Image 1 (tube, rainbow, N blue to C red):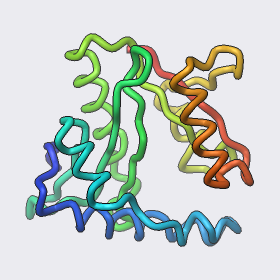
Image 2: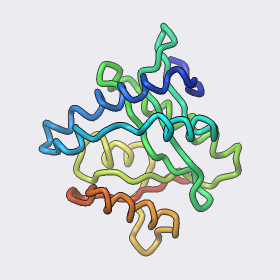
Image 3: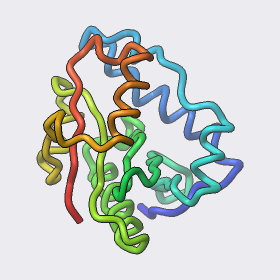
Length: 168
């Protein structure tokens, strides 16, 4: 497996990965998440051009997972990590996060942040195993508060969510 920047031609593949990665949410009683549309091509291109859209490529150099991130208040905020179910449980997500952490260090950022569902086994519990810790509401930066407000406006707060941080 190789972590590298996504190419423009791969962006539709990332949408396919997102759809496949979302399907297991249906089994948790979260069909709205399973059916949620992946990021639009122009959104993916924005992250790609900013240098914050990485893929994990398999032996055939075809993406099996991807990560989107952006700097927010001195941290690299992980917007999305999606691993195709066929590549799950092989350390692919961990490798993408490690790559993002290295990039964040190079950019002089101090931590990784993300928001996620608290009760989904491959969300908050997984990130805790990787060193992320929940941030109390009073410790959220203005940028993280804005992200949470956008998530709430999109209906994501129907299920318990948390903002997490891992120091670099």
